[in-house]
Structure formats: C-alpha cells, structure tokens
Amino acid sequence: VAGVKALRRMHIRAIEESGLTAADEMLYPENYSYLEDLLSYVAVGARSVENQQHRLTVSGLDVPVGMKSPTSGDLSVMLNAIKAAQIPHVFMYRNWEVSTSGNLLTHAVMRGATNSYGQHIPNYHYENLIELATQYRMSNLKNQAIVVDTNHSNSRKQYAEQPRIAKQVMSDRKHSLVLKKMVKGLMIESYLEEGSQPVDGEVFGKSITDPCLGWQDSEILLYELAELA
Image 1: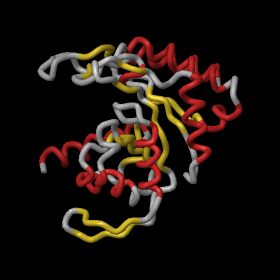
Image 2 (image 1 turned 45 degrees about the horizontal axis):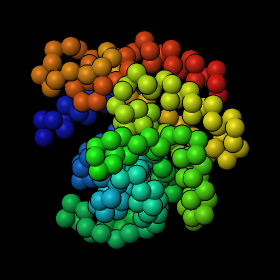
Image 3 (image 1 turned 90 degrees about the vertical axis):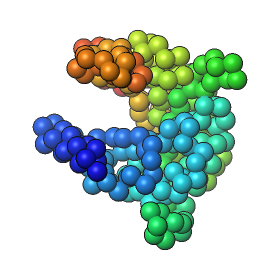
Image 4 (image 1 turned 45 degrees about the vertical axis):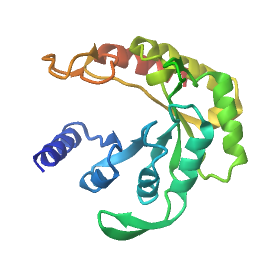
C-alpha cells in the first residue's frame, strides 16, 4: 500500500509541475485501477503480450495501448493480441465479473526479437515495417498504427544507437506513403543521466534497468526529429 501511495504522489507531482500525464508499462494487470486516472498511455511488454489477462484488461481501457512484438519476433502473436484487445469481453478481474467494450486504440510496437542463441534481431528496418504494414492492412483491425521502440533488441541494448535508429525510421517514412500514414511514433528510452547503474547505485536520475539516453542527447534528438518530420 505504501508503494502505491508513493507512486501516485510521484505521478501527481509530475502532472502538477509539467502539465503532462504519464505513460506506463502494464506489468501487473490487477494494479491498473490504482493509476487509471493518471495515465494517458499504456504499453504491454514483449513477455506480457501473450498473456490473456493483459489482453482482456486492455480491452477495458479508455487510453491508447501499445502491444509490443514478442521476443520470438512472431508478428502474428502481436496482431492477435491487438485483435483480442479490440473486441468486447466478459471475464473475472480482481474477484469481480467485468464486461468490456473493446479498446479500438490498441496498436503495434516493434521492439525487435531475440533468437534461441540470445542474439538480438532488429525489426525497425524498412522491410520489417512494410511487412507489418502489409499484414496489418490484411487484418480487420481498427486505427492501424505502428510505434517503433528504438532500444531493446532493435538497438541490441546499445542505448547510444537510439538516435540513429530514430532518424532512420523518420527517413523511411518519407519513402513510403504507407509507412508515413501508419508509423505514428517512436518509443525512446531516456532518463536524466545516460547509461545505467546497479539497483543500489547512488547516481540520481540514472536508470537501474535498461541503459538510457541522457537528458542532453535526448533534447538534441527531439530537435533533430522535428526537422525530419
């Protein structure tokens, strides 16, 4: 309970000081109700996208939700997750029987894949996005949209590669009317200080999970992307 209260205070303070609402990754579907009045975007991770409870819960959300491509790279898994989230369901949630109307703002997030040898396989390249767009257009899915995650397996977890990848995606949008219409955004891992540190690290504003771009490089990148838009 103390953790949830602290999390809410943090979000509320951020909204008050910046005027911006937050995005979050849904690790535990049952916890969403504690933050639903504070979030404007939700992502479902590569390992959670195959989980039925995540899909069902997303079908009841009223904000856009990005379903990430699974670590296997199988696009059908992601598209099936989007389909499941876009239709109505009746299911058990926190000991209640709930009914949802479907979330038509659910969409795809490409974050790369990992093979059986632990090698990273990017899926942000032009041909990858065209393949997804083709499968997307053959589906019955609404509000078809693609967001590209520039870190994780797309950067092979080399966080400094994110600016190059982001600019490559922006360039590819200019070479395809399909991608220009369908690729709606970028998911960039950024924090105050670049890199990462152990959980017990003492550097304020430095990630304790995946390494991130620092604030200065993030600011530069945003201006460069604005020029390419």
